[in-house]
Structure formats: structure tokens, C-alpha cells
Amino acid sequence: MAKHRSTRRSPARGMHLVGLTAALAAAAGTTAAGLAAAPSTQASAGTSLSAAQAEALTTARVDRRDLASRNMSRFELSLSATQQAAAKAKAAQVAKARAAQLAANATLTQKRAAALAAAKAAAQKKAAAAAKAAAAAKAATAAKAAAAAKAAAAERAEAKERAAAAQRVSLPTTGYRLTARFGQGGSRWASNHTGLDFAAPIGTPVRSVLSGEVVQAEFAGAYGRQVKVRHADGTVTSYGHMSQFTVSVGDRVNAGTQIGSIGMSGNTTGPHVHFEVLLGGSDQINPEPWLRDHGVNP
Picture 1 (cartoon, one colour):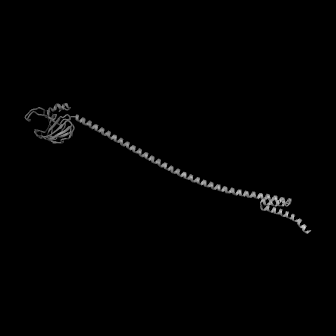
Picture 2 (cartoon, helix red, strand yellow; picture 1 turned 180 degrees about the vertical axis):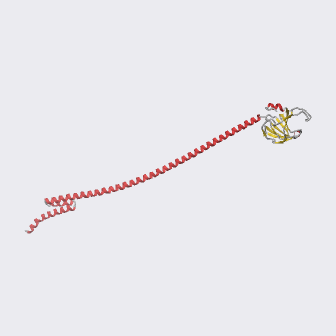
Picture 3 (tube, one colour; picture 1 turned 90 degrees about the vertical axis):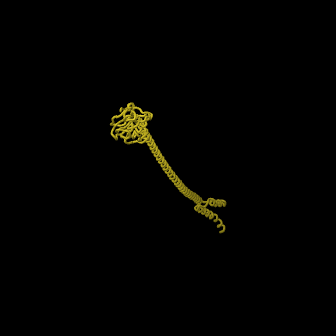
């Protein structure tokens, strides 16, 4: 009888243990499969949970879900924090790379600007040098042209002066008196006189009557110291009895240029210059009309 009583109590005690185990398993986070096994087993054994045990089991399940939800929230928060940190790190890296690229671009821009400024300065310097050279060349050309014009003007003036001098006529001397004329006869000459005698004190300058070239300057016997000048038309004028020469053969003289001084060299009775005109260099003619034809009156 005692054995039968013991057998009858076993199922109730087992059901109580099963409920307690289920509650503990729910509180400890045991998987649903493990918890479901016991009721299934108990159900198969023909047992059921009390209201308290069912409530405890339900509470345990709710707590387990809340715990799982909290764990998932913690995981998600941790993952979000990790992702945010990674995103910040990547953003910082991108910002750093962008800043480095901007700095490089700025450096390149500065170098380009410096190179452009240097090129511009060099171009301006070259242009200034070219302008200066052009101005100097222009000034040199202008100066050369001015010098050429001045030289040409001087040459023209000189040519004009030479032409005027060639046309000018001067008497053979000054302060004179005529003591003998062309064709005059007398005991003083071997034949008729061949020129004009201009008497003046010794040393009085004797001058060429026209411009020309000195073709003779020597002692010539009865003519004494004699100078002959050939003129542009071939006429030769002769000056004799001089005391000295002031020209040499080959010299160019103008009208009025001193060629010597009055003297008494050669065949003479007093100081004078014997003046002759020889057409073509040899034909003696009367000097008086010739001088008048050239604008002077002896």
C-alpha cells in the first residue's frame, strides 16, 4: 500500500520539476527547442502545466525575447558606431587627400603664375630692348642722313664757291700804275712789248687773275722769276719779274690767290709785274680788252 502511494506521487513531482526547469531555462536563455522538448515530452506522457507554470514560462519567453532584442540593439549600436568610425576615418582620409591635391594644385598654379610673370617680364624686357635698339637705329639713321645732307650742302656750297671763284676775276696786283702796255715799242725791249707792266713797291702781293692750276714756277731768263697759271678754257696767264714764289707747280689757285711778290728779277728797270695772256697757252694777246671782257678794268 505504501508502494502504491509512492507511485501516485511521482507524476506530480515530475510535473513540478519540469515547470521549474522550464522557468529556469527561460530565465537562463535556453533555446526554444530545448524548452519545447520538455512539454512535448510531458504532453506525450499525458501531463500539463499549471497556470503559474505557464505564466512563468511565458514571462521567461518574453524576457528572453527582450534580452535578445537588447543584445541585437547593442550589436546594431556597436556595428553602427564601428561603421560611423570607419566612415569618419574614410572621410578624414578623403579630406586629407583632397587637401593634398588642393595644395598641389595651388603650388602648380603658383609655379605657372611665376613662370608666366617671368615670361611676361622677359618679353617686356626684350620688347624694350628692341624698341631702344630701333630708336637708336632710327636716331643713327637720322644723324647719318643729317650728316649726309650737311655734307651734300657743304659740297654744293663749295662747288658753288668754286664755280663763282672760277667766274671771278682779279687784277694782278694793287696800288699799281701801268708803266707799259701791249705792243708798245722802245729801246727797253728787243721787240714790241708783249703784255702789261703793273709797277708797285717790291714785296707787293701778285695774285692770279682767274682760278686755275699752276703750270710753271721758275726763273725764266729775261722774265726773271715767272709763274704761269692755266685756266679752265685753256688760257694761260703769265706773271714775271717777281721777287719770290708762294706757289708750286700743280697747286690749284682761285682768283685773287697770292702766287708771289713784286720784284726786279730778270730784265727790268724797276719793280713791277709783267702780265701776259696767252690763248691756248701760246698765242699772246692784248691783256687790257681781255681783262675788260672778264669784268675788270686795269
